[in-house]
Amino acid sequence: MNAWVSSMLGDYAYQFYVIFANELQFIMAALFFCLSLRRKDRFLLRLLLGLTAGDVILAVAVYLRTIMDSLFMRIIVTMLQYAFTLPLMMLCFEEDITLILKSWGSSIAVKEIVGTIYPVLQVILGYDPHTTLNILPLFDEAYTDLNWMIYLGMHLLMYWVIWFVLRRHISREPLGQQSRLQALILSAGSVLLLSVLGAVTSHYRDESLALFICSRIFTMTVAVFILLQYAGLEFRSRAGEDMAMMERILSEERKQYQQIKESIDIINMRCHDLKHQLADFSGRLTDREISEMQEAMDIYERNIRTGCEALDVVLFIHQMACRQEGITLTCLADGEALSFMRTRHIYALFNNAISNAMEAVRRIGDPEKRVVGLTVAREEGNVAVEVVNYYEGQVPSAGETTKADKVHHGFGTMSMRYIVRQYGGELITEARGGMYTLRAVIPIPESAPEKS
Image 1 (cartoon, rainbow, N blue to C red):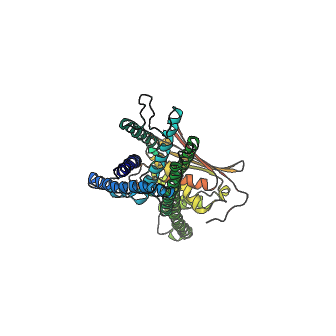
Image 2 (cartoon, helix red, strand yellow):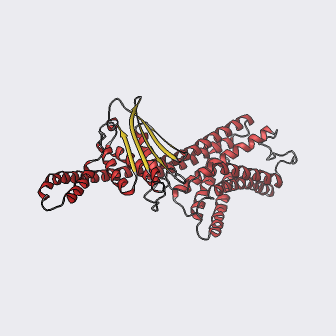
Image 3 (cartoon, helix red, strand yellow):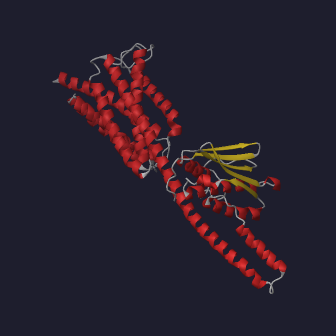
């Protein structure tokens, strides 16, 4: 009886050592990927409570593994260890569930990657991972406390290295609605797949060292694939949100275009009627007054005609602003070359391009440099759009703005690039020698799409 109890206590101690070491690795990996998350109030107390609950799970796992050493039980215990860190994160960090899921899934994948690197290093250095934790020639004992400390310390170092490499790609922005479901499915699938792979590898590790290493490398490959899926998920979510935002901006600019066009049509119609009525005022107004009225009406009728109505509207409104602010706007444009583009895209592209150029020259003191030049021409099956202006100071990058309203501005270059890419084109900007050039080259399709 005493021998049986001693044997059982020995099994429990061994299982405790193994499972506790695994649990520490899960916690270390998880905490690295939670460094960017916001902590909840009383973080240390919450962490202590969570770890206490983890001890209960650990005790259950030790008991289950001791009384039943089967493949199925190994899978269950591994899944328990994986699952433990998720509620711990939710208890300690105040973030969107998708951020916690990304951190949780990433930490699990990294734990499996490191769990492969270490035994591979042991084999390379001439040690058998089946019989020892040793990785340094100074310590020959198989399972001493010092070897356990070196083992966990090496894992901690590798977690830090991987986190340090990935930290710039870890975003605190929550995923979009569709990506949230994908993140949940990816996390659940990752836990299930890695649990099975880890349990199978562990269960048959004594069969062959070569088979064990190959299994670990395969598990690491799956973990790397999972990390890439998380990165791709975030990229697709950001791209989807950016696309939706750009479409909203273009929709608003389309409404703006319609309103401006209607106003211009009304003004031109009124001016046309009023010119024919000027003769009736010859006895009541002086020649100077009539001349001033004639000149004011000519301003509205002297708008540039390019062969593209949407471009004409943009040029009309900016011509008016340029006259008032002492800016020279020159234009040499073949508007018919833009016939394959949607009206809203033409308006948004040129409105943003000219607005940005005018914003730059407004800050120039020399009146001779307050010039904006626009050209639109066909070039070997493409339409080339070029806007040139002088500038002073630093040119804002895409997404930045010099305007006071940072919320509603700063998307000009981003939306222009988005529009140009819709047609398979390329947008290039260059600032050199005080001259800023924006150039868009868009291939002209053989068949034009329906415009809207």
